[in-house]
Length: 407
Image (cartoon, rainbow, N blue to C red; front, side, top):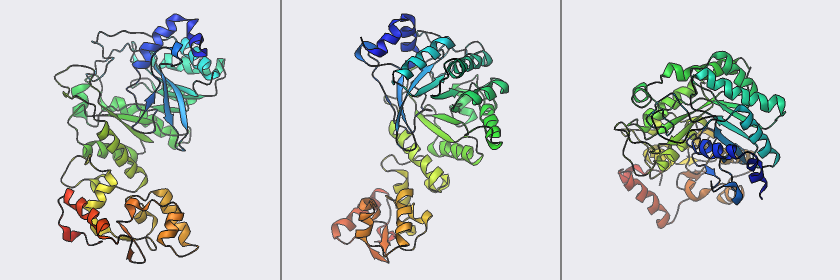
């Protein structure tokens, strides 16, 4: 018998609850570090697979397994996009704090997980739900002396005292804003409002600014459930970042699980759109871009190209960039050159003369960048075949070829 299966074989009721409440938690991206996420196959523990173990990645690229579950999928709310909405006839379950703590510690000891991601439906009241989640974290920290990672979902409407207590027990917290406009929120989640959803984030921001917590909270937006454009979504995210309301916005492609006249009829979740929004969000946070730069007359990102390349093709007057003279912020706007490559280039300029060979030695990816840079005014694209590439790209963007002054 597999070790993980032995953990739950002692408590068969726990196995039943885990299968329900791990599946119910899968739609929250807030513990993922990108738009892509993996999960173990939910085929049962006897096959050495464990439903509920999700893999997230740290900023350094390390893969971290977490137990990702709901405290309960009972919910007083009736959000139209949610599988756990009040009127849905689905299997329901609720863990006790002791059960979650036991399960977390046992899986942690067996090296199946490195931490817990705990969210919940709203059970009875926001305070009741938050108290049960806090009791879980308290048992882990105080009874089991658990030093693993804990991520708690803050429950909108819960008292400030409970939110503060959550920050003492958890390594990270998040609170989902769900949708980028009040109009969309009222349409799909009528029991919710922006003031209520923003309150936990504002409290965490205040404590973070007072250096009472390690980091701001994160949040999640659902993509494709409403007609909100990419520009509206990213403008909302930009505002949250500017106000230091969140450290990270996660984007979750809308997955149709309910039938409702207010929901879009789609066959496939918009995963590519989700991916492009993550790329654009990265440009806002780390590349110095503003939302208005990513859009002209259009309101949505071009799904054919990553947003940085799309911006470059619409702003050819910015190029070519001479990498022997350009500053950091100019370099990272070149397609193919990110912060790491830009820093290598700036460092190499201090010690010698740059050449194409030197750039290759440094590991600078020139496959795309070569069309947008020069070295002391000399282009890196020489052959007719290579020059033809950039002209083909301009045709995709419906540009006049005489705008391609860089080439």
